[in-house]
Structure formats: C-alpha cells, structure tokens
Image (cartoon, rainbow, N blue to C red; front, side, top):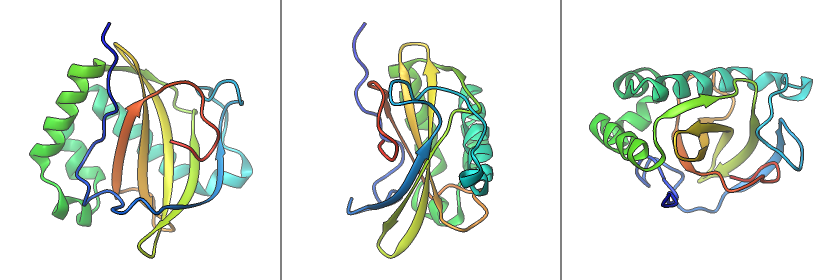
Length: 168
C-alpha cells in the first residue's frame, strides 16, 4: 500500500496565512500513548461542546460525500467568500482517492487548543477518523468565542502516531 501524503484542505488564504500561530492551553481525550480514545468532555472544556458537535457533523457529512451540504451549512461567510464550493468537492474527492472513504470515527474523541493569527483568536478542534486506507487527523478551525457552528478553516493530514495535546 502506497503511503498517503499530507493532505491539506482548502486554500491558503482561507487558512491562517503566515503560520505564526501562538498556542495557549490544550487538552484532549486519550493518553500519552493513544490519542484515539473516547471520553466525556471534562468540565474545563464543556464550553467547547458545540465545536465538537460541529466537527462530528462535518465528519458525518464527509463520510456520506455530502460536500455541498458541508459548504452550505458549516462554512462561515468569510470562508465561503475565499473558497469555491467546487474546490471543496474536488479536494474531498482527492482525499477519498488517497485515503479511501471515511468509514468511522469516535464521537467522543476530542482535542482542543487555542491560537492567534493576525490578531484573531481561534479555537482548534482536533478529530481523528478512520478511512479505508489510513487514519486521518482533522483540524477544524473556529473563530474563538463565537457559537462554534461555522468553520473558519479545515486542515487534514495522515495520522502518524500519537501527538502531545495542542499538536496537529
């Protein structure tokens, strides 16, 4: 089986251009040996529950190849103005070709960390999903302190082992 390269979804202008992210507190489910573990949200991250719900909803739609619905219902207006619906479909189709279809994920597996880019505070929600050929780590980007119902960005890459909290 040929390894799947890193897969980045959406265009650079949509994603935190510049890469000078500053990370604050980070937490996740799991242990130092395994980050693909389900557990209830701890009291300290209950405030991010909607981000987990949104992240899970988008993964469900990815598994059903409902790319148009993802774009229409889960991307912020700013994201929509920077990225075409057809580009999302093309990139998710490329993900399917490289990693295979998304077949499963754990709804109560979660990770959260904060960052700041160009003066904007973000919340990052990390989810891991099983695809037919490999595991993919998803990074859902939300503007911090908004309702966490619309994405400012979305990254994905092949999961290569366990990472410390706050890493993607």
